[in-house]
Length: 172
Image 1 (cartoon, rainbow, N blue to C red):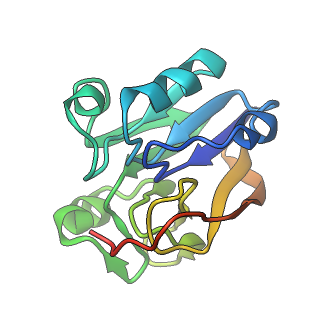
Image 2: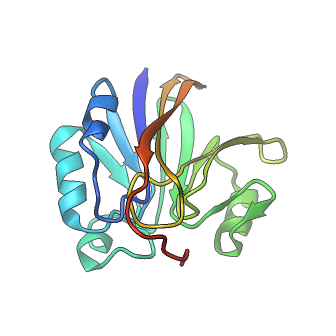
């Protein structure tokens, strides 16, 4: 059994509450737009970290994290990419790959919109943890915590970190 803390779109801001909410997690997964390596360094110092780079990430993040990450956690095939879309609206750059070899869990970020949706066509669970940072147009900063136990994904919890502060930025 693995307890996972899922985060995205920190945009160089990491709320201290993340550490409290992910305290009992075995791993942290970041779905892109870290901001800087300082964010990934803090997360790595706390728990094992997996992640992908996002569209705002520079060389420091891109040299450490891939654009796409496919791996197995317990008995679940996981595919993570920053710009991926969601069921019925997958990003053109990954749509063909998803349909050719569907994972059991597809994770993306980018939209700043928290979503947990099952795709009946692909027999795949999609998760987007929303945005944990202050940059963007979202109103509430969010995370997801869940458990992978063998083939089962369960105990999914949405965590609200509070309102976003700072000015609204258009989505890239």
